[in-house]
Length: 105
Image (cartoon, rainbow, N blue to C red; front, side):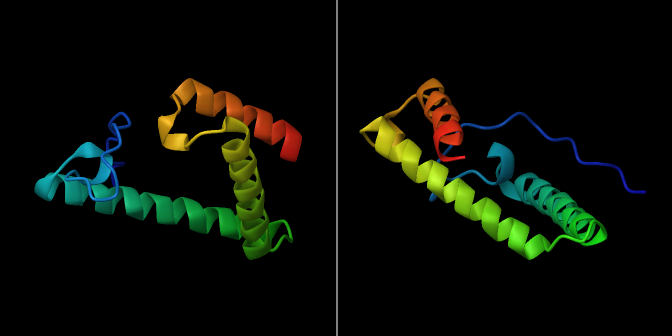
C-alpha cells in the first residue's frame, strides 16, 4: 500500500488564472501534490461508483441528480443574495447555502 499524501490546509483562492498550483503550492512540488490528490480523488469517485453498483443503484444517474440539486441550490442562493457571490463573505455564503438546501431540497 502506498503512503497517503499529506494534504495541507485549504489555500486562499487565486482565481482561474492564478499563479499557484494545487493546494496553493507552485513549481514541481505543487504539480506532484496535484497529481497525488487527483489520483486519490479518482480512487474515491471509483469506489463510490462501485458502491452504487453494489447496492443496485445507477451511479451515473445519482451523479446527475446530485448535480441538478447543486445547480438548483446554487441558483437559489445567488438569487437570494441580491448581489454577486464574489462580493459576499464566507459566512453569508454558508448561511445562504443552508437556506437553499432547506428551501430547494
